[in-house]
Image 1: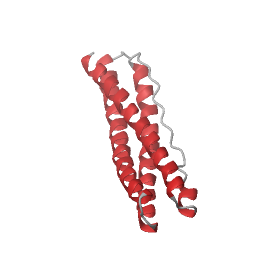
Image 2: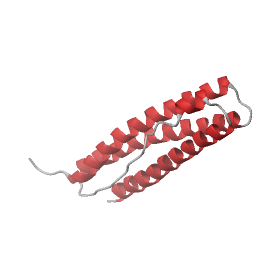
Image 3: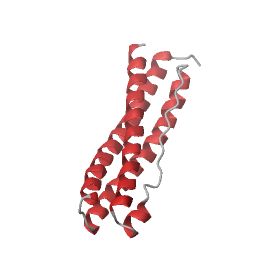
Length: 138
């Protein structure tokens, strides 16, 4: 069987694009959760908390999909002799405490978690875009 570098590059680019799609969806949901979180901090009620957590859960699911896609991307990169380490944390976002001890301090802690997750996702997007661009220029 002959090694086809063009095919391997194409597969790696496609895997990178799938990872980027999940990461961008996660970023979108984190942005929405952040906005709902701000509303929650400054007078939101139970409904606001529920919507915020719905967006956080959607983002968590997107981040899980992205982790799977990034692992696949990493495997494809090995086929073209490139390596990367693109890890994202899908932590629990303090959901329980936010529902049952709803208040400014807990909302602020949740907001901090959302911001940290958003930073990780944006960093993973930046790094993945860079690697995909490098592959396309090879």
